[in-house]
Image (tube, rainbow, N blue to C red; front, side):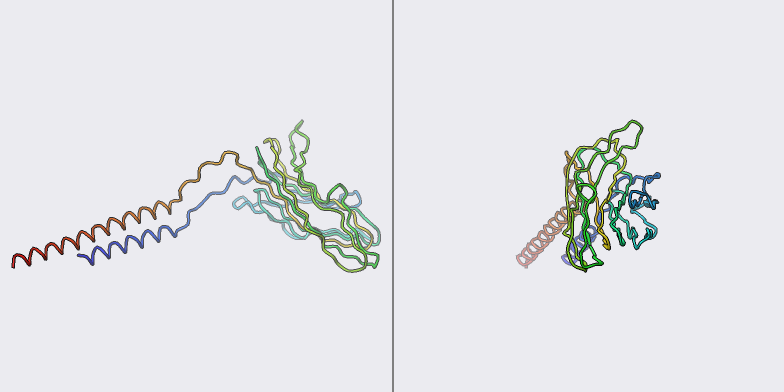
Length: 275
């Protein structure tokens, strides 16, 4: 009898451990469709030289960028989008490059994607450069505005609100003398602000000028998340309930086993007295 109780107790605990090991599933938030708003553009010397769009997977929300884009501008100058990735959360990762050729030149890369954000929103941005000088005089990148990367929230409705700066503009002037390649520091920023539901796009523009015979690679990301001001109490995971139930079962089985032992001892004692 004791063997049967111990076997049942072992099987109970094994079942509880197995149930606790199975991960719980979670559901993702709503994925905003592109609706013609997943777009990119390249401007060089004040003239748009290329534009296009990218996709958002309706199931995973992942951004899909078909293939790198490179545009020749003459005189050894060119501009390219090497990669574009991220998610409709929204988060946007970018990697672009440009070359000034024999003359200095301005460049502007803009990316936008749908955003469904309301209330307190935290935005984070980061960017860095890899600058190459083709001549011994050196190389320089200068932001067209105060910073190279400018992030905004946009309301596209008729008579809507003016674009709202996300407060995370990053990227400073960077230069060096002599030929070769040097990397800039990593520029980062974070800001929390209140957004209305009217803002339906998140946009980032990389604007800069390059000195002659200079090539640059720029990479970074822009991410936005809603800050929950009144988070709900965290429910106890199902595995914890199962573990508690298993412990209770172990106690009951242990008690039954103990009673069985004591009962058997009493029975043997009575038998001895009868003899």
